[in-house]
Image (tube, rainbow, N blue to C red):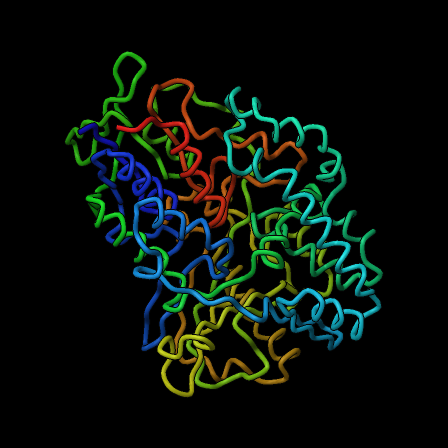
Length: 488
């Protein structure tokens, strides 16, 4: 039986392991940490449980597909529920929107509470649908780096429809034109942050992202986001995949232009196929030192990072839901601080995820688990200790203003994750969450391919390569690899 080795047990690495095992390969997964998941792990402290990283679950069909591919019933491993409410939005002027998953209901609420029209919401989401249908087969589900990807009729149709994806305007410019109220422009600008980009520079093509939520829906795994990883690991093990934890890979080995295996702890492990789920920057710098480095790809602007406070709260806040956004009053200034000054803005947009709203066991009775996140620049040697102290005070002041409560009195537990610890724990260069940013119209074409053009049978998956970051795209990177590997 031919053997495949996966480097990294992030969601894309596990998905790749499942797909290769289903193809008949003997698969080993090497993970430097003592646990699987990468960014999609969990934090437990003082009786509170938090999903450590990604907190929004969309496109569940890409997870279900892995179970059906293996001939298993997804419900025997993993269950989730569709959310009736996407997110709650709070503005400094007192506006609050509880964005329903029902487009008509959401559009009506926007019209009732703002200067924007219901028809503008519907027209915008229809445009989002168009971008998805033009791009998903070509840009999301196939390699952009193989000729055969372009030898499809749907690819030809997409090329002739290229103008519809709005690649030559910035997302902000498109959204400013779409809505009669700048607060709604800001609401849809925020989707650029889903792949760590700046809406004032990123192409309007990113307006595809709302389609994932409003068409396919937003979901909550019944046991939390980390259960995605646990269920996929169980599936992989059922298929015979072996997980080796605390096993840092030191080198990808090759002979005569073809991979031969990997070295871990000074021991060689042979393999016919190697898949790296490690950030592409570290893959080249640490594991492929003697291979010509793709300098243009490795020196591109990195995506933003995050500063996260995991707060145990000794109170219940009924005004907050599962997903909450408290917007900065000056959105452009916030992104200028991140991208130009490489600092944290004094009035940051705050995202709060409270899974105990749905999963009561995530917090003690009468308490809530707050995942409090702001967007920050990637690590470039900033004085993070001072930046974090100032950011915490600014966050608390903003929460107090908008919620009209002294939140600081309710914090009984705190754990912090910043760009330095993100890089250390997840192997993401500079702590950037999504590899390279998408701050220009050519970004989709500038991500590293899912295969090596230097070494035969070497593949790459995860958020730092094509098609991009986030759970759905990371899973698609594994699918693209699968489509390019023959059965064992």
